[in-house]
Amino acid sequence: MLLDELVTTADTVASTRSRLAKIDALATLLARLEPDEIAPAVGFLVGRPRQGRVGVGWRGVAAAMGEPADVASLSIADLDGLLDRLGAASGAGSAGDRGRELRELTARATEREQGFIARVLLGEMRTGALEGVLTDAIARAADRPGATVRRAAMLSGDLGETARLALTGTADQLDAVGLVVGRPVLPMLAASASSPSAALEITGEASVEYKLDGARIQVHRAGDSIRVFTRNLADITHRVPEVVEVVRRLPVRDVILDGETLSLDEDGAPRPFQETMSRFGADAARETILHPWFFDVLHVDGRDLLDEPLATRLAELERIAGEHRIPGEVTDDPAVAERVSRDALAAGQEGVVVKAIGSPYAAGRRGSSWIKVKPVLTYDLVVLACEWGSGRRQGWLSNLHLGALDPAGEFGEPGAFVMVGKTFKGLTDDVLRWQTEYFPQIEVGRTANTVWLEPTTVVEIAIDGVQRSSRYPGGIALRFARVKRYRDDKSAGDADTIQTLRALLKV
Image 1 (cartoon, rainbow, N blue to C red):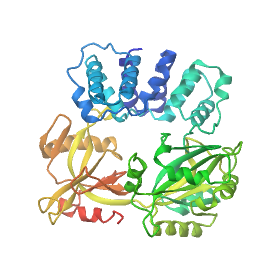
Image 2: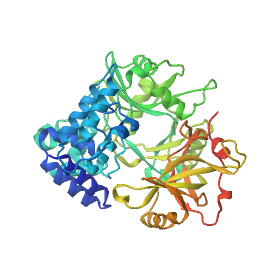
Image 3: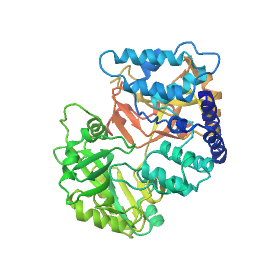
Image 4: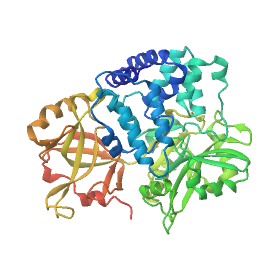
């Protein structure tokens, strides 16, 4: 199949809000793919090609993009083969080899295809083809039960391979996909609530557990073999030897554990999230020690526990890893849930997760059995620029550049604004339309993708916190920023300061 057909489908999916329309478009595409095109196509659509990261960053992509082709001729297999070659390049001269390979292929790509290839390589796919939608499309294209396809995807941790099996294999082969120690599964996800009490109203009796400010891990042990995976199912075993050693000492032969790891300071308090992530991703010297805590167990010594109630799983977890359990209490009392939440925040953690005590482990799903509760912080910031949108936001000014006031001139001119992040989250169609009409009226300059603005527009932004960053001059970046509303009642001089935001950093 031509890559152009995949790009067209991705554009169609991104341009509609209708879940049914997305499923129709994706199912039509999937049904027409050749067997060896299925897994690559699915990987491209969800922004996770089967080869993973292939050593090409935005500078390499920008340098490789020359004059586009006039006629579409590339196939899905051409792009898949390129990623194979980019991933295999190593040693002296590998950067040059990657650049040459990329230039040769993008010279054959149309302008739309060049943009698609760049988004795939940089992990910036925003097609709206979320995995749940694509899973339903696979079920429709293969004429298989949706529940069967979802379970196979969850337990295999590989949506592309699940799609290939559903579309080319038998019903029995799809049904046979099960939990395998050593093969990561998609993690269970949590919904959100405004308070522990509100969450408890949904779950009923629950285990109210600390939500650590760390990195999610899934650990598999089969005898002496131990492997550690991230929430995205990347194998990082070689990076976390201390986690491996903890699991090696547990009184069990075969086990699958779900948990978090983070680094601690000298007083036992959690270090800033970014320090954990920096250590989490490091292959070099390890000055920071990671400590694992576990909150669930999916398999113990030949016994699958996915479908067992949480109460049963917690009992097994206490038996095999009690000293490494995440703190929490089982309760149906809102007062107790609120107290646990206060204790978690006082300990420097993010909040709590409230988990229905009778719930199974629904791998890969975000339902109402697990509900996270953490405080939402809001700040008034100034819009410094706005980028043109893509996909469904094509033609609209969308992604906001956000700045905090620097009254003392600590990071530049006194009274200027220091950029602290970007976001397009939370923008409705009405707001996008307003931005597109209004921002050109206060424009001070523009590039191909960005309109720079007079720093006069105040917007209320919700964040989960800040993290250290060398990307911005103030040394911080917003975490999970989303737009709450524009503040017409405030002037730029009323904006929150860079010093206020920096105070959120954990010392």
